Image (cartoon, rainbow, N blue to C red; front, side, top):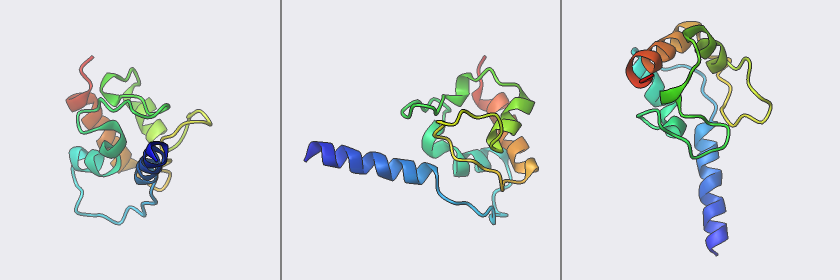
Length: 108
């Protein structure tokens, strides 16, 4: 029974991280708002999320700004990456998230 419960919870988390998003949310304006909407479920609000293999903590990323924007939009990922692809995300949203992560969460 315990294994079933854990499996069910993990499945729910994966679906929460990978849901379809049509990007019809004009109320999200700042990089922080966009990060909290798209990223915090897996990466945590602080950027320390490490609970899924393939979901690195963004707080300590060594990616450059450009690399991060490219990665958010689904380019340059390993085939077994658990991170959902945000290919429909407008570039300005990916840029706002990258700026937020680099300036507010990344402490390196």
